Length: 88
Image 1 (cartoon, rainbow, N blue to C red):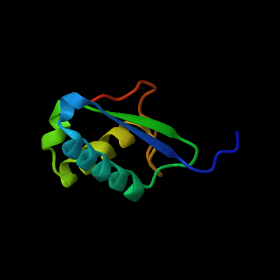
Image 2 (image 1 turned 45 degrees about the vertical axis):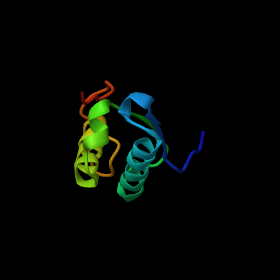
Image 3 (image 1 turned 135 degrees about the vertical axis):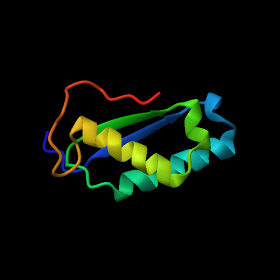
Image 4 (image 1 turned 90 degrees about the horizontal axis):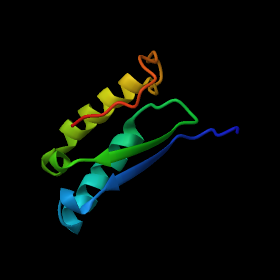
């Protein structure tokens, strides 16, 4: 429908940790999304698993970039599959 921006949503449940930990993970993921060169018009939802609480910024960024490459939403990346990528 003529959407020119890509949007991200982050789901970080209580199993990940307390409020401070969940907010820290969300801040890191928002920055990762801001730095990514994503094609326009995509809506993405990221569900954080328990291991996400112990990941530093660089590990989260590397994981997000790998997921976005697999999904084919980064500028210049071919769409490799039509399935939703998942990291456990």
